[in-house]
Image (tube, rainbow, N blue to C red; front, side, top):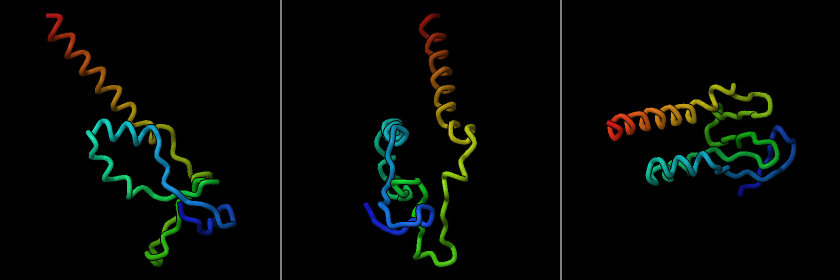
Length: 100
């Protein structure tokens, strides 16, 4: 965990990568290949969730404040809905093949 200044919190806080169920599901779904993508996850403030500023990028540095710029629900859930549709299609194919 990195301790650096968070412009949203206004103090020096911890920053780390958040790994959740989605990361675990992606690793299982891709047979472990997704582990290679984890180092590219942004480090976020442990208090507010804002991405850590990238100082080495100069004026291209970016900061996303998740408390004020939240994604609409349909942009967050597209992956889950895609996987559910795939499961339904595969189950339908299974029934068609094995039920005659």
